[in-house]
Image (cartoon, rainbow, N blue to C red):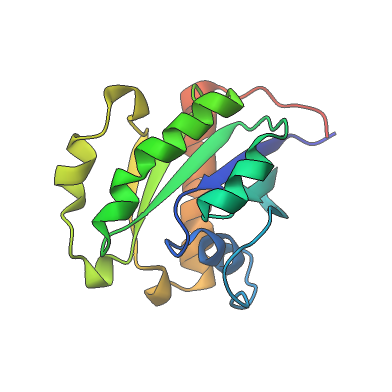
Length: 171
């Protein structure tokens, strides 16, 4: 029997959600925008991880979010070069409430730090307290290799387990 952790990737289109998981798994680039729910399975330090990569286009997300999803961890994504992706975190949080997962441990990945146009610290300080992520990771996925992204995912899984004492669930 092994344990598993279910992770939801949420954020606007183009912020790096799909690049993050595909790079962590050593897969090639995707063919374009994620237009449907993509499910990835991998093992991180002995923990089986199921990752739900939700589309970032709100109209596509709306139909999927009505399904019943239970996740253990939420990784929100924003783009350091686009203030709107930070503002839209409140939309994604409202969807977490609708899905009944807003109480789950949350992490924030601020991607595209290599072309940072927005100061993430200032924007993050304006987020509602209830949305406070456990940790914020500043990345430039385009400049990270598979090992670095896999290590980042591993750190998130370890922190989530430590933070919430996730109970091992039978697979």
